[in-house]
Image 1 (cartoon, rainbow, N blue to C red):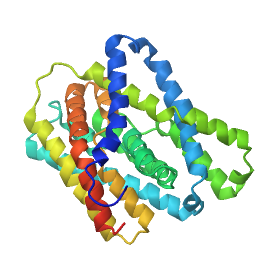
Image 2: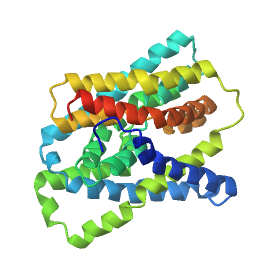
Image 3: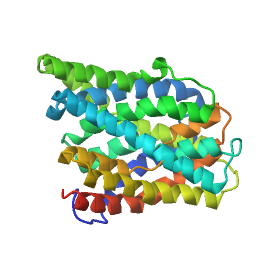
Image 4: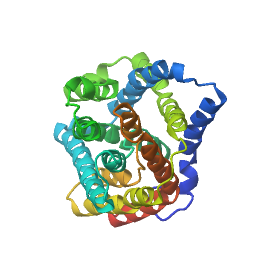
Length: 315
């Protein structure tokens, strides 16, 4: 399913959109209330997602090589830095200034949904393979840049803290790598692995539904700025994917790491920037408009860049 131009890939991504829309509808209907957000997020981020990560990483033989895992993390950090720089140049070209949405635009457009969207996409397109574990390891590098440079950009003052970085998912990656690198993974009881698999099974739908509720809360009536949102869509659906695919084709990496870069080319903007913009007095409405627009654009961008990327790397 990963090779050849196949418009049906759009249909394959529809479950992701269905889960986001289910969260949107649940909030609209009052079934998922704002009062439940904190406990629901803690369940998703600190319980279900770490179990999902732990289970999917344990079976990945490639991660037994520490250098290989660190290479995946480095690619994640570099990719976020590259996209933030592109978004910064675009913000300057648009004439955006601090206080007018510049910081919100840069972080929202520059940080793709490397977590829920890409992991869900890999679960659909590459079930049972090594790609999910590789993506989750790669995401540690993304987290490092996002929660340091990204947070500093959108808050203008917030300083990096290890406490912010060491969340449940990152800890799960580090614990899984410890078990893999020490050879202790094969000694984990079967019931523990099965339990992690079952609890982790709720991670993707739960997190995508939460994404839907957040988008419902912040998608207000602020005037739609076609120039700003259109630029973000152009960057996220064309320019940045082209850069990721070019890197995948040019760098002397093994096929799994090349495919990893292609997967990063497929992601729309993440919603976390909108949450941070709201918290730090930025422009959350702009962030949500950009996120929604890039999500819609991804319906066409995903099959195209999957075909173009896999063709160029010879997958």
